[in-house]
Image (cartoon, rainbow, N blue to C red):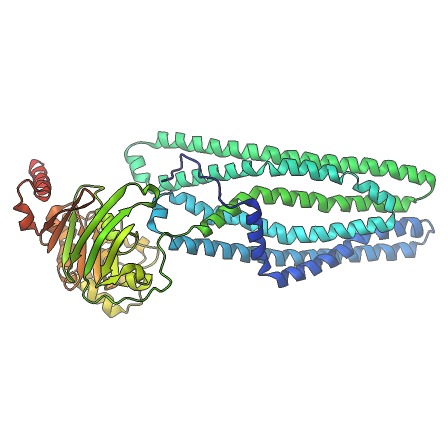
Length: 593
């Protein structure tokens, strides 16, 4: 099903438990560093938890006995412990930051690499803004989870155990009095946070919708301005932002309830402790210094609990983003290289379709091409014509294996393309689409994209295409940055055509490659193509029938197959033929204009 920003994405197929396990598996790759962090956490917890003991000594011993020197020594040791604890915390935080950055780097790389391996259908069926959201925003949220697990979870658990041990050692009764509210905190926090997962998942969807909308409108800014649709676009933007705001507020309200529970638990814990402390103080079973130390310890006791609860809340909030990242990683291509794939060598360029049937994965019941068979000799130029949606582009995309046939075989020089490695197949077949893209960088980098080609080859191909004057007119020739070249859409098309031809494929596919050029530029392209197509098997998809009159064969595509086949003269002799009707209608329209 094709997606758009007006409808929420389906919920992630990756469960919460599986997501957490996979995040932990990433952290396991850095177990040596995790062990070091744990050791530092133990040392840090040790130095921090002994500080209240110095408070007890200062009150019950040094101050009670008027020992000023002893008080100074006690305070000095307390300050030293605090300094060491601070230094260890800095070292720990730096190490955990590196781990979280390494994890998100790896996750983002794996997700991006998998996306590049997916078929065109994956990109055709969803807005590119949604894909960008998963690579950028969702990976950043995954980084926050990893950082919470490594920098906060382990140190806080260790610190909590140290504090509880010291409290039990100092006074078991007061310690147990402090622990009495923990069950209340755990149960209420679980009920609040676990139900908040769906709210945060919904918010991520709304955020993804908005990103997809912005990306789509940025790409379509010209029609927006030319049709004066700014007001309608702003209204749609407001609607999507309102959905984002509502999703955020709903998710945050539940999280705020969690904070109330934590604060209420802390207050109840202090009240119960003080009541018990007053009672035992009156009984003479404790001292003022011990109570002051315990008050310090209960503050330290609630600190990691508050942090752990906050970490859990943060993990739940961001877990849906991590699940979305893993979902992209798990996305499988329906076009995969065979395990026993071999490099093929295409010398003649013969192309053969044998009973090929094709339908899109999201609509398997509707065949675009059905039981199609044809054979093209090496070196021939074949043009595909027919109405929009007839399947012309689908046929040529199957040659390059951008799509796989549902049934039947496609052969290049008698070799099944499904048994060929992608590298050898794409080396033999080059496709120039209707919408040419020049990447950031120099003209040279674009011309040699994906290939290691020296300047002599570049010059040769540029001359064949009659583009030498264009290159020489640029400020720095081949080294001119694309953004500084000031190229027209037609000139960009010519550069893209040169890039395709420098790759020197045996089979050349041009999908409306001259549709965006003016008449003069088109003549330049046609002149170059006469030379460059020689010795290559070429497939041309074109709506301007004047551009394909000299093709060796013309396939008229319709009714899920090839309904007419022949050269221009042969097809024009067919009275009532589809090609003749298209040709006469097109030129009648030109005469009318």
